[in-house]
Length: 205
Image 1: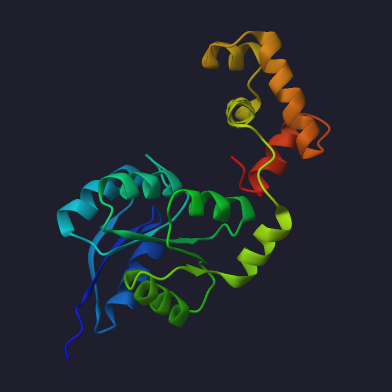
Image 2 (image 1 turned 180 degrees about the vertical axis):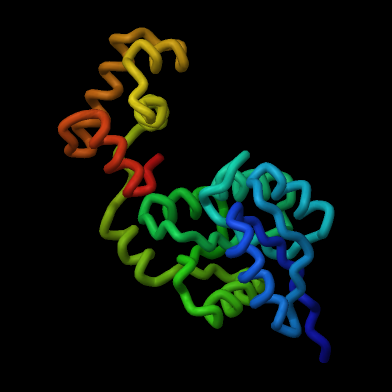
C-alpha cells in the first residue's frame, strides 16, 4: 500500500530558519515541501497554487502574522491544515491559534522528530499541541481585554500620545483614556507601557 505524499508549505520570515526546517522535512520520504514564503500575506496564494496539505506557519511575519494567515487559510483554502511553529510559546497565542482554526502548535525548540510527527498527524486530521504550552494556557485563563481595549493598547506602541491614538482610531481622547485605564487595571500594570508589555508577553495582542 502506497502512502500519499504530504505537501507542505513553509512560511517564516527568517530565511535560515525556514530553509533549515524545509530541508529537515524534505528528508522524510512521505513529505514534500512544495512552497516557501517569507510573508504572511503570501500564504493563501501559495497554498492555493501548490495544493498544500499542511501550512507550517511562524507567528511573527510581515504582511499578515501567522494567526491572521491561519484564519485566512481556513476561510479560503479550508483543505489546507495549519501547524504553527513559533519561537514565542505564549499562552495567549495558543488560545488565539485555536480560535483561528489551527490544527497544531509547536515551539521551535521542539526536537525535529516532534515536528515531523506533528506534520503527519495534522495532515491526518489530528490536533497537536505542545503539552507544556497547553498547561500554561489553561493556567493563564482567557484574555481579559476586550477587542477595543486590545486595539487601543496596541496603538499605544512606540510611545504614541493619547491624541495620536484618538486620531488614528477615530475616538475621542476621553474614550481612549477610558480604554487605556481599563487595560491597565485588567493587566495589573502601573501605566500603559507596562500594560502593553504584560499583554504582549501573554500573547493577548
